[in-house]
Length: 217
Image 1: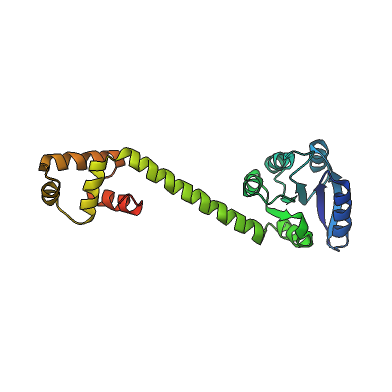
Image 2: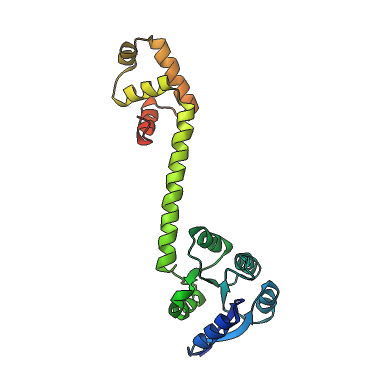
């Protein structure tokens, strides 16, 4: 049976040596190359047959591992698993954007062999810890997006227009709105026209529902 050929990119010699010994105990895995910096890593991927790369994010006290991951992914289509002590969400996102297939915290090293096998078969599920971090980040980004949209809409719609949208949402006709606000029908029509133009909509009811969904009233 052919073994899965592994490249370890890690600048901590003790960790690299220990990881290599740990993986070598697996009958289907073989560490065929090791590197501690960009030059050695790129030389290895270009000259040695590699199936899976284990990449430390921090190399020489910088996040060079992410840059190398992007380069390897683009040039060689490498299957790369990030190994790191960092659990920061932004770091995880950067790793996946660069082309990493998985992201493993070093303290979970016992999971590495199975992650390698999954990556080799192009079946890498994101590990539970990274997946949870990603879900939380998506929630945060979704909330920020919603807050931005609300702020943007508040900047577009005047208080008088918002009041009319509220009355439209309540089901009132333009005549009833003019009576409630003590303004002319023409004024109400002008406000509605301005609202639809600003929101790029064709229905005042749709505009009112959108304002309600965004919590503007």
